Image: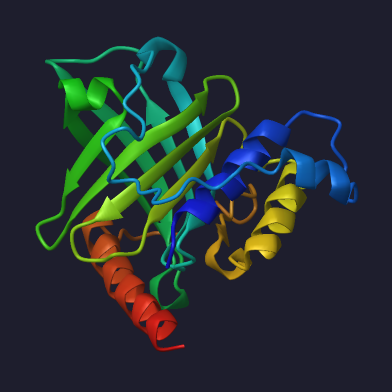
Length: 229
């Protein structure tokens, strides 16, 4: 599966958020559609790498969309502190595990050493069974942030779209779907559940490391199916 069409799908929506663009104006969309660079890969060193402003980044961020379309969690929101403590960045995670169609609320913290990588939006996670790296490739501190990622055990590229509000506008969502349909990748986008009624959660916890293991298995199965089709 090629990753670059998806990131440009999301980037286009980021550009269109807050504009007067109507999805039905196909000619305007065609003119605005970015050119897909050859050989795009999140693992390239020139992807991301800009210095982040922690003060402006601080606060709550809600995951509104992700790739691949793997249904193991919902209602993910991340709280970012305005300052580091003991040379460590600590992110608060709240989400609901949806494994086996059961909704279980989880609350945990993920820490990163305040290294040059972290200061430039590169987040390295080690879950034992796999390592996952996310890179911040775009951020508007007041509205949206886009991260790409890659795993040590799966060739499938990862993307996460975060917003300052739980749900993005229908217009932006329609634009994403429009361009995703153009690239034939609409089935790869998972829209995150963030409604207040749906995110109340229930008792119980499913650690993030367990979810990553399940996601990794599903990523591999998905990739094999696409390779055989």
